[in-house]
Length: 257
Ligand code: NAP
Image (cartoon, rainbow, N blue to C red; front, side, top):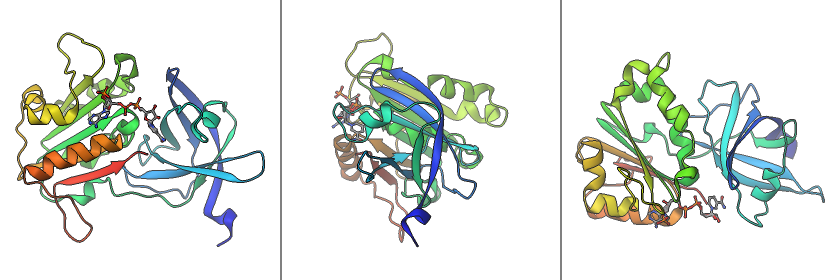
């Protein structure tokens, strides 16, 4: 396979700015591009010297959308994200034809409650998973806990809220317990501690009204690598196991950077 066969050149069709450091973008989608919700793509940007810099990006959009959508932070001075943040509609982004990752519900067997725990842009794969009918049919309860530093960083609230009116998922939307968490502001009625703390003190369970339980609960974690380590440790210490390809367990994890 030549280098060019490994990727396609796509165009930015839409940009959405959430904060000066957070934005989303849509790309045209190569008709042969397939992925399972929860997986990530590898995106490439050409540098002035002709070399390409690649980064992994979880896919926000649904498996059936005609576009690919991604959610990005701008890392100050970052080789990829600062370049990406300067692009405009019509500009080119390379997309590897292969997709990657195991943060998919197929990792699990026999769960009743799906817990999705995200920090920052780690929300991305869960938006894709929430747009899949199987997710809504397979689980009795779906918890989405989404932790950011400041409330203006809470992205995709319109999409999450919009699930209630959604043509296909509206009938199931009562299953979703959405818990936004803002850690660096005190907002009345909103949780403000880090996810592992909220697990340890039981506040997350109280907020959603569902008990974590290894028989029923299947847990997906995505975002800040330290949050993933700390959260995984809490679950493992409490008797949960990580899903392996050969042996389904309770936990599936994806480090974002
Ligand atoms: P972040 O530091 O990841 O914080 C987002 C949320 O995660 C906050 O609620 C934060 O709580 C919480 N958190 C952080 N560490 C945690 C831990 N160990 N356990 C539990 N929760 C934890 O913030 P961000 O704005 O999304 O990203 C911050 C930095 O990450 C950026 O400046 C960037 O350098 C880097 N980043 C890099 C990439 C990349 O692709 N290279 C991608 C994303 C982010 P607190 O408020 O208590 O910290």
